[in-house]
Length: 53
Image (cartoon, rainbow, N blue to C red; front, side):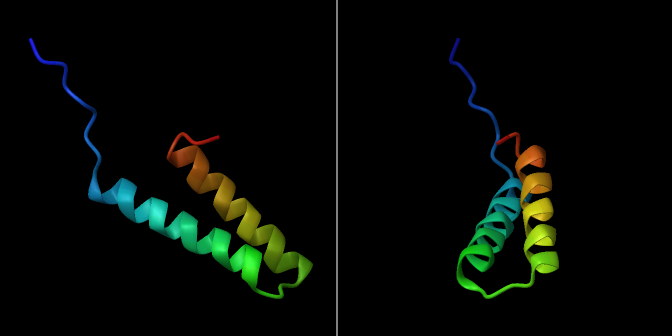
């Protein structure tokens, strides 16, 4: 029997693209400390959702 690969959903793709955008903002924008910490928190949440942590 053929081994099934896990499904990669549109939701996962969308979350990965959001994560990429957040990382780019973190790297490229001049942010206040508060905004930087908020971006880091959002990145950690998405990484946990995507099981990347």
